[in-house]
Image (cartoon, rainbow, N blue to C red):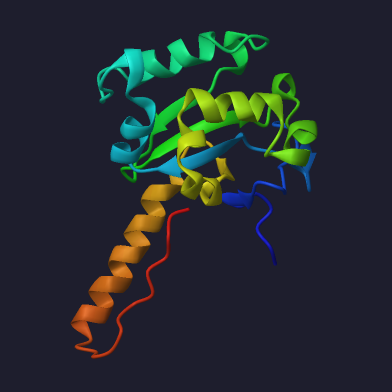
Length: 173
C-alpha cells in the first residue's frame, strides 16, 4: 500500500492543499524545493556587487535578490533552509492556498513564482540542481530517521563481514 503522505513527491505530482482531508487525515505541509550542498549554494549566490556569501549573510543576499523581482510580496518569498542532513533546501513554495501551488506546478520551468525563486536563490546558474526539485514533507524531521536507517544498514553489513559491493546507499533527494 502506498504511503498516504510520502516524505518526497515528484515536482509534477503536487500534494493536496495543506490541511485538506485525505482518507480521514489532514494533508501535512509540503515544500517545493531544490536541494544542494552549502558550497554550491554560496557559490551560486555570490559574486557581483553582493560579494562573498556564507552562512552569516545568505538570507540577506536571497532577500536582496527577491526584492529586485517585482510582482511578488514577502509572503511568497523563497526560503533557503539548512536541512538536518547538511544540505540546503531551497524552498520555492509551500502547499498553501496563498501560493496557488496546484496551478503553478503545471509548468515548473516557466511559472513566474518558481522562476523568481530560481533566480533569487541562484538555482538558475546550476542546471544540475533541477533534478533535485521535489515536494518534501515539512518540517524535515524524517531525514533523521532515514539517516539512522542507513547507518544501521552499513553497520550490519560491516559486522556481517560480507565482501562485495556493500549496502545500497540511498540518495536523500
